[in-house]
Length: 204
Image 1 (tube, rainbow, N blue to C red):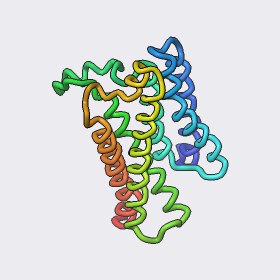
Image 2 (cartoon, rainbow, N blue to C red):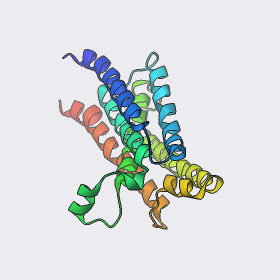
Image 3 (cartoon, one colour):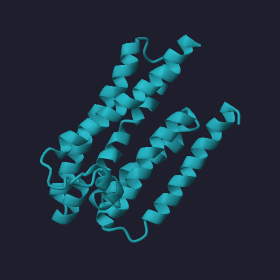
Image 4 (cartoon, helix red, strand yellow):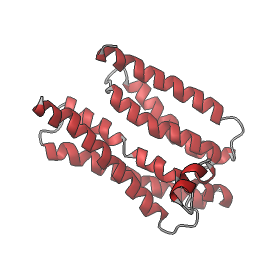
């Protein structure tokens, strides 16, 4: 398949996958209140990506990376993150807690790839340092703001629903570890972006 065709097929296929997962996970979630709280941000993100598709099309790689968080978060909203069946990984590494939420937070950082791609293709920055640092700082900022939103939600609703959304599982440093996971995800994909779009072109 030609790259330009793949660039059209991949986002449509990923949108179809999301709609299937969303429909399945909308049936009898653990808590409908938690389901709404977890899914509203995802619905907003998907809506923005659908709307922006006519004006700016990211690469198939960028859409694929962004979809990881969307799918993981949608599944997490169905079970609540601490109850997602993740025993295989927990038992494999001997974890005392369910780290599915950490994986989801790591995938938040994947949006740094799309931010870098937008900056690069639109020539919004000239410095390669800014091309790397702006997406990284954007993810860290969003990660911190989201923790504040979770905190405010948790203290304003039913206590059980609030605890489920926080998903701290008794860890007093959960928010800090979530932000760290977001940051590590961003560093990971920015390394991939720099290799694919800058270093490989130099070597080629």
